[in-house]
Image (tube, rainbow over all chains, first blue to last red; front, side, top):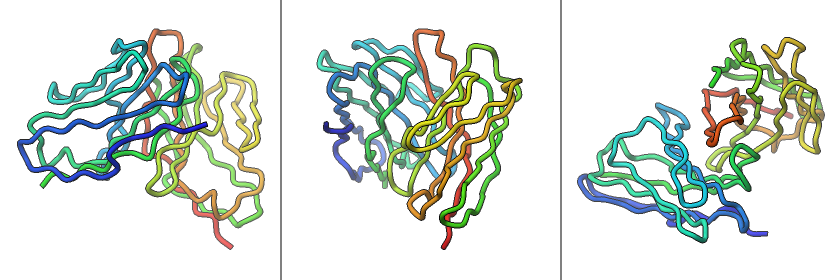
Length: 112
Length: 112
């Protein structure tokens, strides 16, 4: 079956702009989580959605937001981009909360 | 979530067993031990998880000490494709949400 699909794979944005990243989970998976990976901070949890509800949130500013649709697809949005937002953004889906998570290939965002 | 401590790097000869240790001395009774790995430029990949009993699957074995304060991931016959960063994560599953708190991991280098 198809894995977790993230689009786009690469993105270049300018400081101050906003960006929306998309994640399509594995069919049947209802839990979607987002992570940010940078060389300095490593992998950090952003938020988790289950059945269209945000169940958990990491320690990121309000510029980072997300949502989940009824088909379990998820989007995350970053407003007023800063240079430090340059990172690999990873989405993971799982059948339910707490079980094995499957990660996508990520979206590499570069802010210039 | 309990914190974990892993050696920053390890080497292993191809064909030999790779034993990756993890210390989680502050783990509580309802927290599970998860292992993921990340091969360069890819999303993390689930390997195995356990609570207190030893676990084995097609990829690896997980040995958890009786006091649960440490564990060892064993790759029985390491290959070059096992070169990756391995993350040991402790996660509480009793709540309504879950998140993977990644540490710095162990960079395993498998050599000929």
